[in-house]
Image (cartoon, rainbow over all chains, first blue to last red; front, side, top):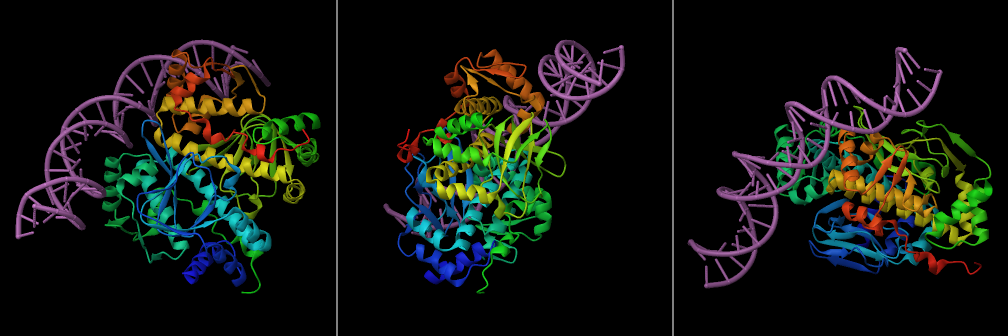
Length: 251
Length: 251
DNA sequence: CGGTCCCTTGACAGCCGTCAACTACCGTGG
DNA sequence: CCACGGTAGTTGACGGCTGTCAAGGGACCG
């Protein structure tokens, strides 16, 4: 498990910089204690809770969500394996949103002090974590654009593109195939659409041959075509290895 | 001007923590050089640019925005006096969005190294800046909720509540009154609504007595009523002085 | 005084939500 | 073996919120 965590971390942050074995070990060491499992469809953190630790997601899918008083719910982000959530969050008195699982999740709970220690000792790791935080913010802006300007078809296509590329970044795809454990209700809450309209939109994407979605498996026969339908611009994921300037020389 | 910057900084971060005179001076000193002015309706940074510096907004209004290829435009955030933008941004190779002015803007351009120096030397300042970054992220999540779940009336009311409270936080309101230099087209681009529908929505808010909007001045006769109409929950602005635990003892 | 920007209003259309019913699937238990 | 219930997906009918198109008015400015 430590090995696979190391691998996950290498893939995740390898999208930004090449971490040395020592760097990777430092991150993996954070996950030594505090491994926790959560069942599907349960809350990990609730709005109003006091933040206590950061979390590194190791397996499974979760989401950040916000609710209105009358029950309307908006998923504002998905959390996938390799995602680190809430750097510096302990500065806030209480959470303004909740985090809930979609499917069973394994994550590592990390004390703020431990992260600080590792970031102080490993400059490249520090930069990689800050990069992760910047990309998270960029995704949130892109979602704002998605909800504000895109049509239903574009929104759903965009969501699939983003999820696929993020999963591919951590080695969780096979060719054009990936897992997609979301219900259509989840997709609706993420895109601001009703489940009925999600259903129609998914079928439109199917009939255009842009996706094959059966069970919990998504296949994208032609990623460029799906991106085109979505008006997807990959720049916000910042997968450009800018971090090469910070790459280790050790390998 | 240095004095007024000091005052602005004190108000802005005073919402989180009480900075010592030395802390405030340290921030103000960052703005000594690199003061720049921008005309109304011009770009400060463009998508694709290489990030070079952070910016502390001293006066005027600006916005972050993203565009789609066909010209659709989404404002994803407003930048008001006291806002600091893009901590750590230099880790990214290029901007994924643009920043443009609404009205003439004065800002201080700050070199990454200078910020780093101040944050290293002043722990409370560092925490205040990280808090600012967390609040920015929280606002982006709230906008996601706004666009995904709220009706046109709720969205516009919510926008007005947020802008008013943010301005009040830096002392730019008088009673229930504040400046609102946005055109209805701007409001539309921020809320994902057409200008025509913004117009109708604003008039509905007017006829309900929730706002008085004339010229570039917004009056909110009953903030609680407007918040109620918007379904506004202030928690995401994190104005709870959690930072009191980090407050200076110097006064 | 013409031009431009911004606001306003009306008519009409369409995207998407709501409501409702139905199917498929699956695990449980009688 | 089948009944049963719950979840997820699907489909049709209908309505409404919001967009589009178009035109006009007011304020400001060169």
